[in-house]
Image 1 (cartoon, one colour):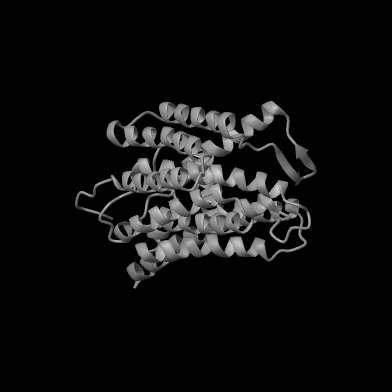
Image 2 (tube, one colour):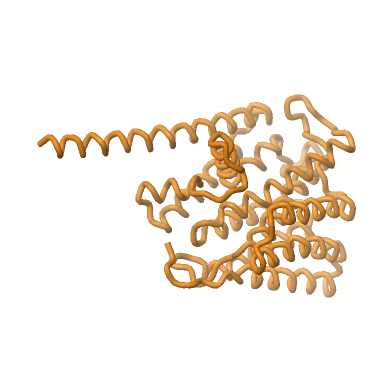
Length: 321
């Protein structure tokens, strides 16, 4: 897609702008809760920066993310302590809570890292997610979480000007891992905060897990799909290849801008489908989303195979004529 050298230091600019905003609000507006969060985010940022500079092994990156996840739970008490009635499951035990939190944070951090394969894609998906979180946290008075969401949104928006196709600078692992980690943290904070809202609150979400999944549906779908395809082909799930959704759309002759618009639309429409599914239980919505993603995966495979078959028929008829 790009033939000339493109610098990958965009994540550094996003991180610095985000960090400056957090520190300013911490010192001038008394938001002291932001300081430990900023320190925790810096762990993942450093892992991404070292990876961009020295190409770290998968094991080292995972260890850094696991360490950061444990630190989050220890210092901020942000962890998945309940499934809020999903399939009848409520409070989780200590070990299970810690394990599930680590898995979710590590998975989502990597999911956002993996979708950073097209100019502007990670930026627009993350921006939509952060905008939703920022507005919701503002409405319920959780200003620390709102500030984290909106500060990162502003930093990414400034970067997107230079990352939109044709990109002048890339995010790099420095940016994608940091953004993924912050969004994973905010997703868990959303579940906990929503669970603590009064049942009669107009801002309480009755299907919080399904809503969170719908808000992050494209990174979740792309990562699960790629991992499963790699495993089925007896490859390491962490080995880079061209099985991502954006590669699939490239094979259908979609341009970069069209790919970004299509995948953002997929994410936005899925989110609003869940938002307007009032009265439907979290469990049913979860099953629907799971089934929908399976359908999308098989539909993609069927369409690509039928397209190949039609192309072969055209070649055959052309040679026979």
